[in-house]
Image 1 (cartoon, chains in turn brown, red):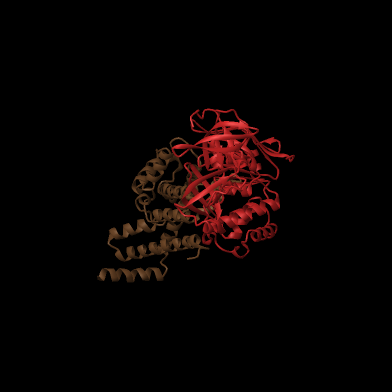
Image 2 (cartoon, rainbow over the protein chains, first blue to last red; image 1 turned 60 degrees about the vertical axis):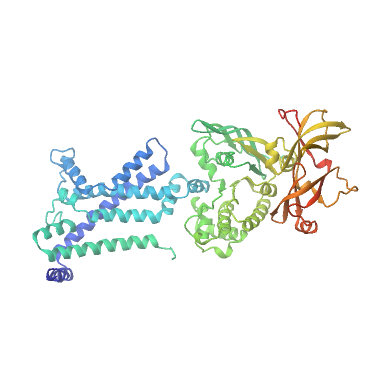
Length: 232
Length: 372
């Protein structure tokens, strides 16, 4: 019990004194996972729109692949990106292994299918005739897509939250392609793993609290956007 | 009608996979007229309408709007801004009534100042003046469909397509909305195409009818012509000619035909106007609104046909009742609530059903077989 209380006390101390190392780690986590989520949003929405609005052979297979991708294990992605970015790998010349860029790449690969899968379901769930109705009101194709996305706003923002939640909390890929280098690629999850391993439970608890608060804050903003204008 | 053709379809076919779901050699729409496409579900009404509206590319053939063909995507897109369509489901956006009504104008890039007066005016026209700020998901079915109609009318479309717009409404909302729509169509002179499987709806709104079956138009023409002179049994049944009896011409004298029909286990006679060869087989059609009921046979009536029968069913139909009768053959009649109570009509009641020779419609058709 003492261990926990001591941990919480130390955690609060670190937080209240705005420990610079904790701040830096938090800021990097937010940047990496935020950037990865934005990239995934662009990729995921595009995929969802293309698949939802077009009929083509193999459509079901594509949907099945996207849905499988929603459960992609971060360590598998980490391994794949590491090999890709290895010095003599296909993208080795970029020289970005063990940098935040590599982490963004890995996290985008994790979040894209999550956002695509949920967005696709959201678009397919819209009423059958809505597309024709929007066209019949005189919409151009881009206008139609925009209105459909607006109609699916609620589940689409849920998709963004799921994507962000998936990457802010993952550790396997970040540690593999980032390396948990202090001051460069150390993020909340990788730091928590390391501090726990070293027996520094107080620091680990502090980092975990920050992670929870961060996840809550981002989702609170997204939830506000999602629920705006709705009455109970 | 001498008015110009606004929409012309020529040799339209639509395939779904390998199946031909629509085949329309030609169809015209004239400025200001209301054309009703009638037919059961699956007859191709919606497919035809979507094709005419440029929302579905035909497999072959062409649709011309004011003399120029809608060929490429660009043509159809431009045409989409000059027409609009209302579907069975209101398909409103998750927004307020006002935002819904204004949506088409917004898509056309009109400023808020230009949109507002038009939105308010059309909301008033459809009785939505007090609901402008209400979220669409709080509307009743009737209010939602009114919003959909306001959203369409506010665009001042050159052609308005209506696909079963009342089918999902409860009877009262439906009744009110049909009245209002008829009024608005007449007042604005909007050219419209309405798909419906309801004969009453078509009769109240349309100038012309096209009856469809299995992707084809099997009869079209003026409202009165199609309802009173159906060319085949399918159309007859569809336009409310519920009694269709196979008859054989017994004799023909000075335009007056006597037809032998099967009546129970025996036979009966129906008198009709027309010319036919004795021995010829025809279909005898009688509309329920042309059948009068009484308790005793009345020799002073001018109705040449009178049959004893008993009531089998009483079906309320809004302001009147439909009475199904067994006269040895199936016959239906429309009566008012007053007649219903005066004649004490209920299942089992014996009555005399009569109709004039001029009310009998004959359908001559090959392949009916000679036996009566």
